[in-house]
Structure formats: structure tokens, C-alpha cells
Image (cartoon, rainbow, N blue to C red):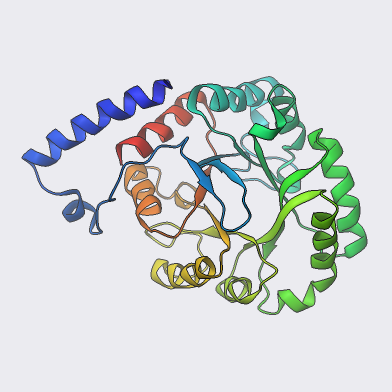
Length: 290
């Protein structure tokens, strides 16, 4: 039994006692309570891709740009240990990385100590040129120390016509999937127009979407975004949530934000970047207690 399972059961009992004496969780948070319990290490399937992984992904890109992030600034050994502890202690098998975060070598250091078929690697490319994207596929695999990448996303799309404008790199990724270089392709959206285009595109297999209860760093208001995500799910796309804590704006309302993500009914999984083992443990405990 994972240590998290024991803590989850303890938290469940305490939560039930508190709720019995005070009020319902629905009244506190203003949305329906979940119909069953969740755990960070739950095995989920990402849409119709057949990719099975943990509900919580370990993010490596907090304030990530120009080849650095809060996680990479921890250093090679601390970040590698954090990823390995996440896998062994908390059952987290989903590694969220990107070229712009500079975290590929750190993920590689952890993955080489784990069974490759037991972990899911999601990475992202900012490039929009087919030749450069093709080169990225080779470079990323070398940097990650793997023969294949589970999920490769076009990073940070904003244009309403991106599915036609970037047809060239989409074709490169389709070819890569046919060759077994990647298992699934998709995008991360940073505008409501791009999100709607992704929902309408049969090419998108996995979408990384921004979702939290206050609309912080999101494409539109939560209700609007959830409506678009429902269209995605109806067509079988895998949905991974990001900005769950509003890039820190919900740091003092983490339990509410996590329950919102779990109870939205539209996310297969979500990614949050911890910066220490205690933060990661806290996240998994909050998920179990939601």
C-alpha cells in the first residue's frame, strides 16, 4: 500500500466528521461534491489514445521559459530526486516537460532509473516550421534518453486558424506517430479561439487546457472553457488540465482549486509543478481528501 493510501483514508474520515458537524462541502465551495474518491496515482486513460497514466502529472515548468523553470533551478540532483520520489512514493507516472522549460535532461535522469513502459512523457515544441519540428523529434529523444515520446504537443497555440496555418508541422507529427516516434499528438492552447479550433480538429488527440475556478491565466471564463472541453471529450480527445492553481493565484485556495478540477468532469488528468517533496506530498493528500 502506498503511504498516500493510508493518508487518504485518514483524511476521508476526518473530512466526513467535519462535514457532519458543520455544513456540506457543496455549500462551502458552491458546486456539487464528487461522487467518488480520487487519488493522485489513479490510473486514467487519455481519451481514445489508449495511453494510461496517473491522474496527477509532475510538472517541470513553473514560470518556465527561455530554457529554465522553478523546477530546473532546483538543480539536477534535487529535481531528479523529486521526480523519482513522486514515482516511488506517490505513484506518479506522468512527466510533464517542454523544450522551453529546459527540463528534458532532468526528466531523462529520472526516467533512466525507471521502467520506460511504466512512465508517460509529455513534451512540447514551440517551433512552427516543419524542418525544425522534424529536428526537434530527434533532439528531444536524445535529450530525454528515450526511443519514443508518448505525447508531443504544439506548444502555446493562440491563432484561430492554427489548424490550417500549421498544417506542415501537424503532418510531421502525424508521420512521427505512424513511425512510432511518438504515441499521440496535440496542442496546448492559449486563447479561446485556438481552443475552439482544437475542439473542431480531428487531428488533435490530446489537448492541454487551462482550467481553474477563478479564470486566472485562462482562455476565457471557466464555464465557457468547460463548454468547449465537453465538445473535445465528445469526440474522444484526451484532456490534461494545467494552471489548476492559476499560476500561484490560488496558492491559498489549493483545496478548492483541486476539487474544482476533479469535479469539473472534463479532465482526464492534470499537471501541477511541485518544487519540493513536501509540496508534492501536500498535493497528493489534498487530492485524496477532496
